[in-house]
Amino acid sequence: MKKLLFVLLALAGAYVAAGLLFPEKIAAWGMAAERARNGLTHKTVQVDGETWHYLEGGPQDAETVLMLHGFAGDKDNWTRFSGPITDQYHVVIPDLPGFGESARHEGWDYTPATQAVRLADFATALNLQRFHLVGNSMGGRVTGLYAHAHPEQIISMAFFCNAGVESPEPSEMEEMLGQGVNPLLLTSPDDFDRMLGFVSHKKPFIPWPVKSVMAERAFSHSDFNAYIYSQYKDDRLSGLEDKLPAASNPALILWGEHDRLLHVSSVEVMRQLLPQAEVVIMQDTGHIPMAERPAETAAHYLAFINKHD
Figure 1 (cartoon, rainbow, N blue to C red):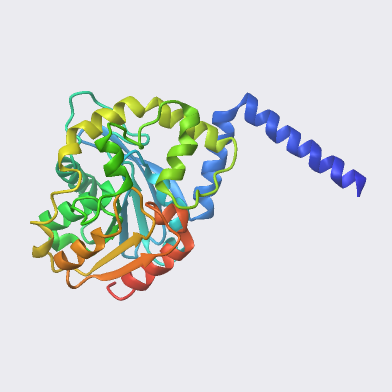
Figure 2 (cartoon, helix red, strand yellow):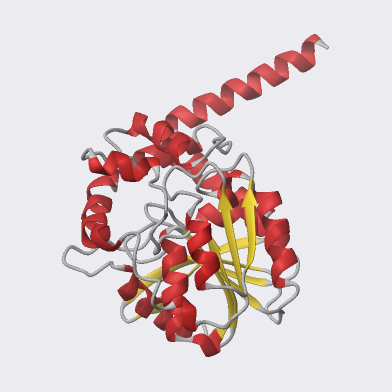
């Protein structure tokens, strides 16, 4: 028993030492293991001279599910959610331009409408002709814009706490923005944990040193995120009201009841715009249900798309 305890302590010490000496490498290994556990691999493709980084998994001959992350997020927001999905569907999850591993260009237009145009080029590059489209937050707004522009490509669309509509009740984020504070922008790497707590009702577990590396990266991108946010802050909660009513595609609206960024009362607006939609409001859940409660959120989503595949 003492020998086993000694071995465990030695292994724990080696892990801590490796994390301190080689945090980026340990984090990369941990992320690769998490992706592999959920049936995903990292890939790249050239689109109009730009390198798109994306995750892909599941049967190549199955229907495709294309997933879009939100503002300041990246493709790995969907990793744990994807495990049950890759058992049945071909999954593709890109870093949208300006986020994740993609390049960042001063002077580019990063508004959701332009991102939807770029997404169409990405889909063409991968020969994605018909697919299920799901987006969270900003990605949900891009989902609505894309479905409006390319309804023939969309088997179904799903909106997870999406931007693009004006909520009847103001969110906590709206009130903070009115005071000149954007809770999605970091003031230091240590601020990452505060931001994670703001976007989730119960913070998802992120092992050390992966979390410390994520915090450093998020802080390094904070100024550019502020640049992107400044481009569409005036239409952050508008833009889909005049487009979604024309959509007849099967739709799912899923929201966390404790969303502090985009108030759950937005669901009532979305119901009116998409009367054909199924609606799920998840208890004890914040703004990123697919990361905060991945298994439960995936079960809701699978129940929806299995009806429309």
